[in-house]
Structures are given as C-alpha cells and as structure tokens.
Amino acid sequence: MTRLIAPLIALLLSACGQGLAPEAERPDRPVRVVSLDYCADQYVLKLLDREHILALSPDAAREFSYMRDAAEGLPTVRPTAEDVLILKPDLVVRTYGGGPNASAFFRKAGVPVVDVGWTPDIPSVMANTQRIADELGESERGAAVNAQMQQRLADLRQRTDGQVALYMTPAGVTTGPGSLIHEMIEAAGLTNMQTEPGWRSIPLERLAYEKPDLVAAAFFGSRTNHPDAWSPMKHPVARTQLTKSEVVSLEGAWTSCSGWFLMDAVEAMAEGTER
Image (cartoon, rainbow, N blue to C red; front, top):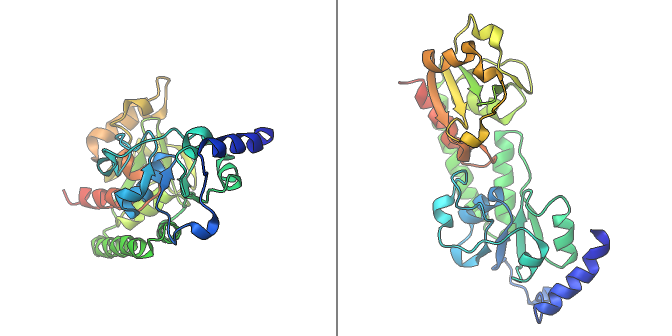
C-alpha cells in the first residue's frame, strides 16, 4: 500500500479541483469532519454541531451505536481513502476505521486525524473525552460531559453495599481486575465475583456452590454474539444463574466502545441491586 500512497493522493486531489485548503486558510476549528467507525461516531455526534459533520460511518445508526438517534439523516461514507478524500474533510476522526495505516495515510494527504484510542479505566475515559473535545475545538463541551459523568459517579458512591456481581457474555466470558468492566462493577457499588485479572471463562466450579447477587448480562440481546459451538454459558450451572440471580441486561451500545455512555451500564447495575 505504501507504494500506492503518493499516486493515489495526487489523483484524488486532482479530482477534487482545488484539493485541501492551505494551512493558513483553514479555520481555527474543524468544520468539515468525517468519522470512520461507530466508536468515533459517538464523539463526533456528542461534541459537534450537525452542520460540521460531513459524514459518519455506515454503522452510525445501528443498534450498537449509542448516539444512533442523533445520527439519523446525516450522510455516511465508507472508510476508504477514495471515498473520504473526495469529500475534502478538514479533519478525520477514527478508532479502527480505514485499517491500521489509515491515520498515516490521511496525514500524508494533508488531512489531520484524531485517533480516539482505547481506555483501560474510568479516569482515562474522561481524559480521553477531554482530549478529543480539545482537538475538535469543543473544549467546553468535553468538560461538560465529564462534569456530568463525575456527578453521576458521585451519586453512585452513596449506594455502596458490597453485593456481588458477575459479568457474563453469551460465550461464557467474564473479566476481573485490570479491566474497564471491573471498574464499572466497582463504580456501581458492587464487588466483582471474578477475582482473577484479565478475561477468562466464567468460574463454573465456584458457581456450583456460590451465587452472585447480580448477573450483568452483556450482548444477550444480540444473536450475532451467540456462539453455535459449546461454550461455558451453555453449561447448566451457568444457565441456572440467569434464573436464580438478579439479571441486569447491559446493552451493547453501553459497553462496546469505552466512552462516557458506560455510565448507563454502571447505573443499571446499581439499580439492579435495589429491586
């Protein structure tokens, strides 16, 4: 792909007529923004006015996109160099859209890029939100999002009761310390049943004689995430927990991208212990 970058850029800029505006002529903040994937869509839709959004990813209005309602009526674009550059954006926002070399490609074409990135904990989510807002020229909006998130976290600290929660996916996967999900469980005032770090299969042996107070069931509403092959979730011990414990269904849109919207999942888990 590297050998094709220069001729492709030259061809696309020629097709665009005047091409990209010279640096001196660009506005102080981006006004023609393109988002390349649905994780990036969330920030663009939350932090920018609609008139500054040139195009979103094809997944912007899908059920797993948190800001899907705000995406209605806005143009979409495939995350390919040809389709994006022909629009003449003054900024591209991406997480994974366009592939691993997309950021370097667009920057070489003269288009600035905001890389959303991934966040391992809640403080990093807030820091990331502010960084992206700053790069979009919307620092105050980023600060407002974080202030609301901090207030919601503060409200939840009053509910701490130490009940035990277990995160489950249809594939029978859970997670312990060191993950964002673990921090979300603790932010809800709960204790994570999974005490080993990292992602691993649900602890079937423990579930045979221990019952969590709450099961945080993620992605159970989406059949595309349900494996056809055997998984720990199909074991009778695991399935029993979905009938004996309080079950809170976590929408994929709350947890699939690490953004401020994870607070909806945190609050749902906290409220689940009060039923």
